[in-house]
Image (cartoon, rainbow, N blue to C red; front, top):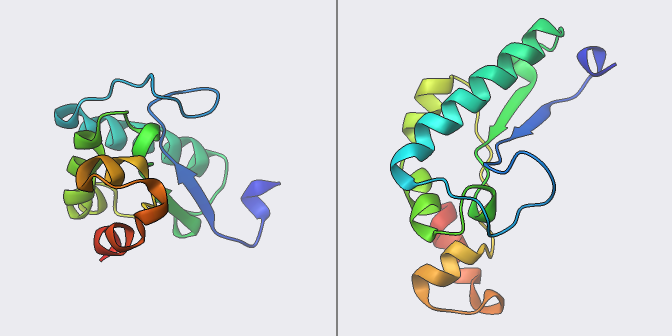
Length: 122
């Protein structure tokens, strides 16, 4: 049972509710933070009702196609992580390594995104 497991639980947001992340999401930058907060409020509430302790939860806002094919959406979320953390009150996990939104931003192919990934993670 997940409620009794002795481990942390990462819960990831995705604008696309089923299947794999594709280029079909349409989450706009100005709507992203509110959508992510609503998503996690519902998920955290359901997990808490199921007996999962809040101190086991780590939240991943989902970057790149998990948000939108538009790089601006991921950049907006990335620049507002502190707002998300304050609104949600739980630790965040953000994975931006070689994401396509970085390539679109700096104009480089995925294989050359190491420095951009590092800069985004700092």
